[in-house]
Image (cartoon, rainbow, N blue to C red; front, side):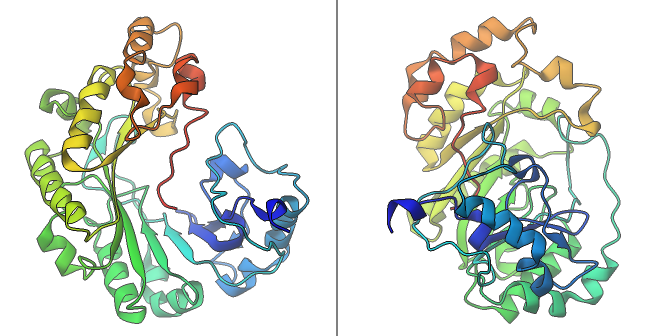
Length: 334
């Protein structure tokens, strides 16, 4: 009964809400955008063990995986479970629906996205009580900046008040990730992990990629977060780096920076989005036709990428870059 149940745990104990209100168990590209339902149409209780959820879990029990993109999948098989089509509400909940951001990364968006979050604001307590009944870890953002959004700050405070034992994992661009803001939203001593999306260690490169950013403030906040990690006040400290033609030469010193501050590194693939079509070809260093592609390959030969701090392992170093990031085993949470 042991080996058979060492399977991906996401469908059984993880859920995330998208910008449109759809419920997924992991990032939509990993699971063919298979949605269990929509919180604007049904209660979470109805969705979580509804027909679509049971169908999705059944594929795992049968080892079918027909809805999974196994090239991109970063499944967590670290826990052995007894799988069932009907399960308790998730222990990990990812709020990935508030797109408000205080910067515009050129590979992410060209303008600020407008959203109407009135329904969530008006029904926040009801929604949270239904969703977080069994929750231990709340993951915040991925599509915006949770510490810059008035709505997300209200959400964080309310979760902390309703569920004082829940731990938080936040994904941030780092500008507001300081002691004052973490205290103000009430999670300074409730942090499980902090992931900072910092795509350069050179101010000139940073300013090209992050419109409206504040490089000096981010670097200062990294030192503060480093002190939290070294004192044991946060379990995980991660730096995100979306690799592109502007920053690939900074990958090696980026790992060296991570080592100094006690962080690990996640090198992430540049994705083609509707909002970055005008710059995608210029930034897409993974394209073999890109003029800097061969130089990129040389960078990846550096032995530093064998470090445990880095997501690129020995197997990946022998692959072409276009295949490397299909094999990345990086996760925002565990």
